View 1 (cartoon, rainbow, N blue to C red):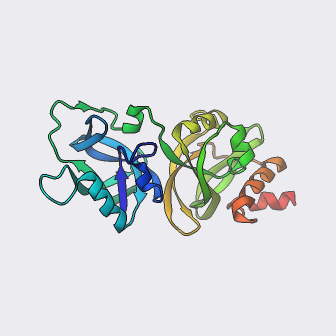
View 2 (cartoon, rainbow, N blue to C red):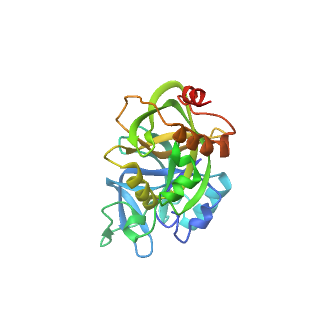
View 3 (tube, rainbow, N blue to C red):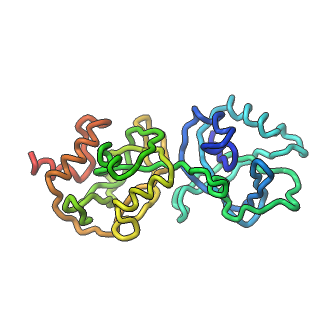
Length: 274
């Protein structure tokens, strides 16, 4: 089962330790709720806004423990009601998950302050965690560190299906990587759990909103579990020739987790180099 958390269960808050062993699926939002400040924690009620939070995969034993923490017993006068909702992992609503549990506040909110952003981490000044999918030179740990990403919470090999790699964006390496749809394609890379603000340093390197933009993609780990991760893609689709140096940097990065496998679209350039 899956759980959407929006308050003190989120990363960095006092109750997050209860979810430390649970799989973080991605940053998401749920629509049709308003968020209020209840003192040392937030609560959400039915409304016209959206609220932001984190989605985790949890088991039956954990949900029972969380029910106790949230005071949910199934009674009409419980502090919180556990219900299901639909969450969206991107602003365009391309990627959604139905029947996700959340805890809705079940008491009067009169006189409480509305948190207009619907984002308790941002409102509290706490860092937000995200999944980031690195698929080109950023698979190379030396490159991503040089670009200012100082905090990697976790990282594991991940695969994006339905795409191939092209080289179409001018950069210091000549022409850098991009993604185009290809039903038979597979892109190998890494799912990096990091802080949203850490991507600001990558924005500079990737010339965000000039050459590249962030988009959400569904990626899978080697066991087939799905995650929703940000990746950089570009509207520049005219394929160019990458340099030998650039291909070698990507090969070195992929070798850490894929032992010689190459993303779709790289093969002909590796053959040319060899």
